[in-house]
Image (tube, rainbow, N blue to C red):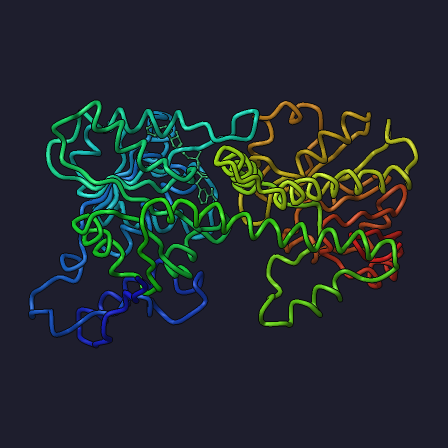
Amino acid sequence: MISNLALSVPKNSATEARRRDFSSSGLAGLLNKPLRPHLFFNTERLGPDVSLFTLFQMKLTIIGSGYVGLTTGACFAEVGHEVMCVDNDAKKIETLLRGEIPIYEPGLADLVTQNVAAGRLSFTTSTEKGVDHGDVVFIAVPTPPNPDGSVDLKFIEKVAREIAPCLKSYKVVVDKSTVPVKTGEKVAETIQRYAPEAEFDVVSNPEFLREGSAVADLMKPDRIVFGSNSDRASALMKKVYEPFVAPLLVTDINSAELIKHAANSFLALKISYINAISEICEASNADVELVAEGIGMDSRIGRSFLNAGLGYGGSCFPKDIAAFVAISDQLGVPFDLLKEVQKINRRQLDRFIERIREKLWVLGEKKIAVWGLTFKPNTDDLRCSVAVELVERLVAEGAEVTAYDPKGMGRIGELAVGSKIHLASSPEAAAKGAEALVIATEWPEFAHVDFRAVRDSMLAPMMFDGRNLLDPDTMRRHGFDYHGIGRGI
Ligand code: NAD
């Protein structure tokens, strides 16, 4: 069933007041469009003294206040819901209670501050308090990979056990974490086992936000998907999402769970596809950027996710693709196509390092500047970052690495490699005295440095652009020996 949650578009003083309030959050800029057109109100339903917040307000709880949970909680609060975010990491909750934001995500700090001040967003370490508060309880805890690629569901199982004794009235328990198909059934079984009398329904509500643009993605999603086998739960879920204008797809639970893994796998496939093409481009002296442009102009294909580079990384794609491979193996329908996607992804970094070796011969004792540590721009997230893996491999070969990242340097100390590299205060400072400069993450600011000054400060002007961020001809004019991905030899 596909429906659209948009209500009719009215104008009254209350909506105007709300729109002014939205302007101060800076959200309009983030969403790159006029103030809050994602919220439309139905005047017919409003009496003169009816607060719009009351109209949409629901009591919601999010268990797990990380990248997904905190951002989702803040966005739900922003549209008027009363949200309590729970986390069992006491330090994280203390940080939030002090008014600090433990992660970097554009627009999130303002959103959290304003909604806490408005009394719509609160934080606790107590699952019991959280479950008491919400009519709908979202689970947004980690689903890390096991060594064999399958999903470690111990966090989900633990939350199910923790929720069970706290269920004193009917609740909808919503799984927002990315989980294997049939996890919803397991969550329901677990809750039932520990609380046989409890009244609840389990719903799957996969999350499609992208780190770096998570607030905009949540406020204006391409689509909202939830899987439910209960009309009562579906009605509440529709109310949760009523303030958002987006196509809504309601499915059964298993299909919703599969949609998330299938979507991420398809995006990873697009990345590996263009990376495979990049290898062919290198062998044939063609330019993968032009090839991507040419095929991306076909509306059936589209240009997005056709960016050749060091391959996909981050906390989602590698684990989700490995999980889908494991799930399909377990189901007896091996997904060999995805195994090839993984192989191509691994080969991309190997090929890049080989290229650096070809040029520098021996990496030991070479001074190498690395721009970028995060797995993508506009985040501080280093989880499964290909840039970090690249640095680790350079260090393992004896290179002396000096790195710069606009947001990721604060966290590099948490990783073993953090103590083995130098950190610089700017891209220019990282490049000073280097024998090679490597671009590992496509932060836009890396395209706007004074390249002549950078070249003059380097010991040798060798540049390896692992994200095809820069224009080869311009870099060569600046005097660099430029090497990109799939851009001929
Ligand atoms: P995260 O590690 O940033 O956050 C998870 C939080 O859950 C942590 O703060 C942790 O302390 C908390 N937690 C763990 N067990 C808990 C418990 N028993 N009670 C309360 N809190 C608990 O992880 P994330 O990146 O937000 O990802 C969460 C889920 O969402 C994963 O399944 C992930 O695959 C999925 N997802 C992530 C993204 C993304 O871009 N990060 C996008 C879509 C979906």
